[in-house]
Image (cartoon, rainbow, N blue to C red; front, top):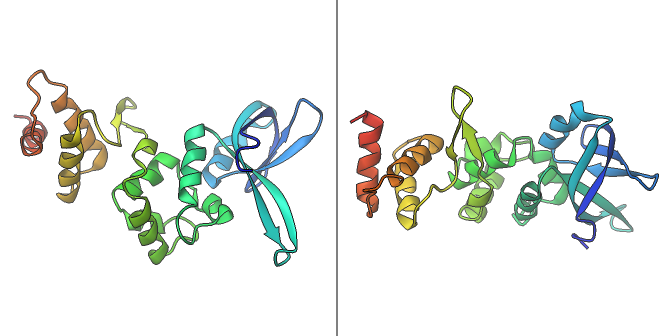
Length: 217
């Protein structure tokens, strides 16, 4: 059922708080639920062509006596895949997940990977216990969703997920995060060190080279 309608293309007629009205070529308009950050991003685009990657689910109402189909739209297939992973967390339903997604997927995924429960608790309807549950159940599953960040001058940096390399990159990154380093900076340093011709082959050597790079030596 969830993938019966995988993508829609039409004209964005309007944006409400949590949904879009999309005019289809066949002459009808679809009401499409949106994650909170996507609704904000799409607000200036009314009247423009739009493509949404969608999930269809059935919502129970009136104590389960009425079942209504709901279409949820996402800006990218990756956003959709993250949502489908997010709702596997105990206590996170379809609607709650959409309301909680006020930040871009990459930022939420980075918080999960870092077990940053403070950021997760800042999301709507996510309390301390739910934030801890999200971090525990999804940590290790979200690396693919962590997106590149930007440097202060607007240029791109390395992705905030795992840098190039094998398991030593992951091990070094975990140690650097435990030592209080910023994920984006740590990934950029690791990527730079591993890009050298004489790149280290052990995690401890990689960490040492990262700190030499950080110190400018």
